[in-house]
Image 1 (cartoon, one colour):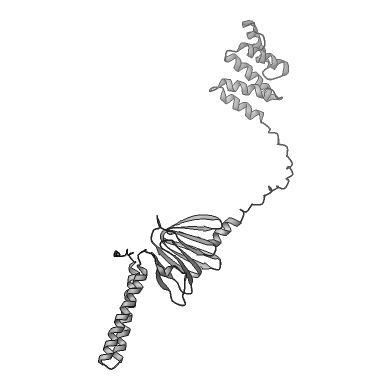
Image 2 (cartoon, rainbow, N blue to C red):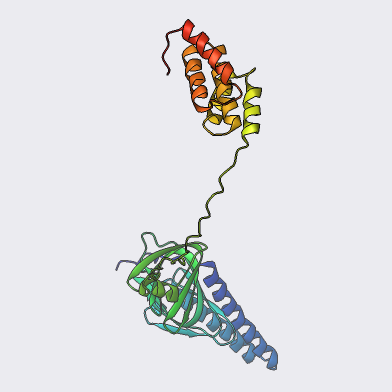
Length: 320
């Protein structure tokens, strides 16, 4: 007959061992209290020792249930429902530590070997789960959302079918409304926000008609008053230009000469004289002849005649 070798043992989380130890010491304390309350007798002491031994055997049996050879938790094969009242509770399920907050209900199912499925019926729960790379899935169902654990610490809150996920460490994958989203540490997700985003079409701003400015009637254009040039002042200004700019002075004289009156006559003779001085005999002769023709009784008619005689004898230039 062959002998069986030692069974393979799965290392339990520290929190699980702590609970086993607390329950064991609590059983021992209760046994000691019963012994202290009973009058000492040999039979009583004997039964107290039997009670302690029985408590140790029960604790060992509970540990063996968690550490059976196939490495699976036999107590996890059937769903377990945990409901809290005014205080939170913390429990271990497979390789996860779960804190169920007050007024919350969760249903735990599955095994670490096949995968874990947890349903958050109401309230909130915080999950601390070992990384799932290469390991069976760990999924939390909350209303419209399915939260698949990648390896992290996160909190799920459910109210009706609405759910909210807040990631403290690591990352989780949320599937809801046909969409998949990966949440990293420090981020959160809300089913109400996600559903609104998927359902609401982008608002279309109404077309804005261009503003029509009121018609403005053209202002009545007033005729610009004609500037009246004082011929005397213009003549004196042209005379002052002769020493520095004789060309400009000649042009100013000829402009004034287009008018009528004594200052036009004076300007016309001054233009003939200045043209002669600047070496333009043909222009000077033409201007002098204009003077005698336009102003035959002018004050400079004799001066203009002498200028004509001299220029006609000195040049055969024709009037420009």
